[in-house]
Length: 74
Image (cartoon, rainbow, N blue to C red):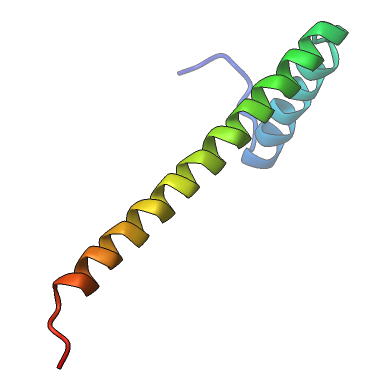
């Protein structure tokens, strides 16, 4: 049998949430270079996603054009 105190589920959840908040509050302060690097990475990700969407749309349009060109006009 365990000698530790058995926390009930709500108390255990509250304790773990509280410990996570304490760890978050004690995190090191982010400097300006890290913030700008994060913003740059976010912008790069947005541009990459936009390029993927545009490439996908171009492929769809090309495939539709090929499909329509192959169908006989009835």
